[in-house]
Image (cartoon, rainbow, N blue to C red):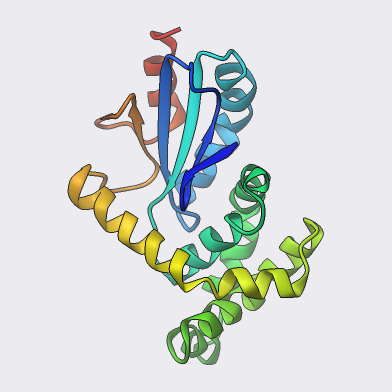
Length: 197
């Protein structure tokens, strides 16, 4: 996995004939389903063949999504993919905590410095515990949550994907730069990949 620009991660070699771009949001249940249905096959079979590269781009929907995206990008580039998988495959658990948050908790997500808001979300969702299990320290986590340059970049890129590329929902996919209409799950994506192999 390598980072081609802030918040954009590519798995697979430059010689790959097919590049699949996935636009993903961590608070999107369909994205979590897609990861569960396809993640292993995409990494082991398609990217593993050497003929396909997988590119992941964030389409940030809300402050919780942004907090998760910033933490998946935390630390060395090589850690992104396992961070991504962890957030996606545990989404039901941590998103449930956010959805059942009290009004007082929700108020903390909307007031004060942005880094403090993201820390509150991360505490309430259990993100600190998740990242600690991945070998990060609390200092590492707080530093990543305070990265306003990355937060701004992810938000700007989201607007660009919507305005310039026509991406309106998640998950959405491109093959070799062409946005796939009506393709938002593994059942509809897989045949379009298989005809290229």
